[in-house]
Image (cartoon, rainbow, N blue to C red; front, side):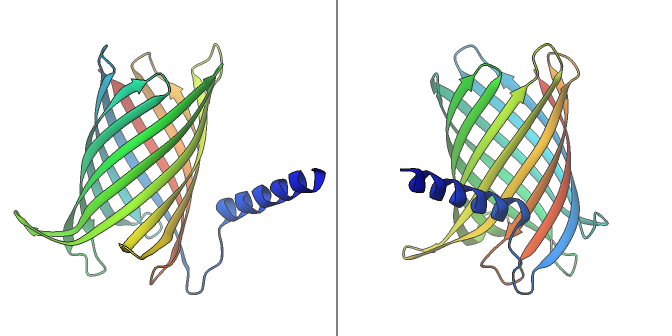
Length: 230
């Protein structure tokens, strides 16, 4: 029994090290980026929540415009510990020749949540169906299907306006019915400060590793966000 427990601890330790510090891949490039987020939420007494989010990302050591994301989503509290949701995202992204492209994403979520005092544990399963390019209205091409699993732990310090969170998330890309691969793992560590009972400021650090892609990146990212509850 002791051997089995030790094996589990060893596996978990190796898994966390891999997630935190990443794996040095052949031809992997490293970059530092910054993301800026603005989010507005509206909750209703019937358990329905709506949100809109505008996000601006910079890469190439935060010197170049990367992409702009506009997301609208909604979710519903089915049970005390289960939430389901769906959303749509429009992405404006530049390529290496600085040409602007438009991408479209649809997603469906199922989130299990467990509250323990001031600790919040959650596991989100997301299925993402996207179109890689939108040349003009009505014409979509290069369809992609990705599943994402995100484990998150959040904590609010009692009697204060401060809280912190940490999470790990992976991307599984389905190329066809018989082939799938992990293409990205993201580790996040951050904090949040409540300006009021409706608004808050947040700062997060993200370490992101890409796998099984042509030019894999290891990205170090600082995320600044402001959120407001209507």
